[in-house]
Image (cartoon, rainbow, N blue to C red; front, side, top):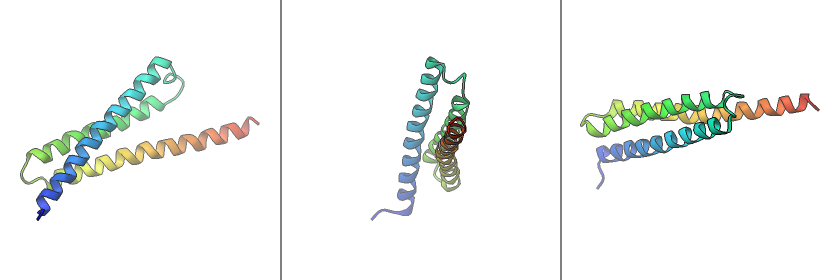
Length: 108
């Protein structure tokens, strides 16, 4: 039988792994923007840097929650930061797409 503490540690592992993966994605895309010089024309690289910051802090806090015995509060904080990072990532993309649709319709 799996205890609640083991379930919580499993969630912390998922947050930790997901955050690390998203940091890698953000840094890879920032690097591609810098190489192609697209970042100089848009704010996309700055938005991705904010995303990477959310995920790095989430990774650090989830790691701390895995190392401590009483980790409920740390895990909750890591979960919230990961959630904000995902929302920021998705929300930014949605706003950018609406902006592109509006600017393209004005030019027609």
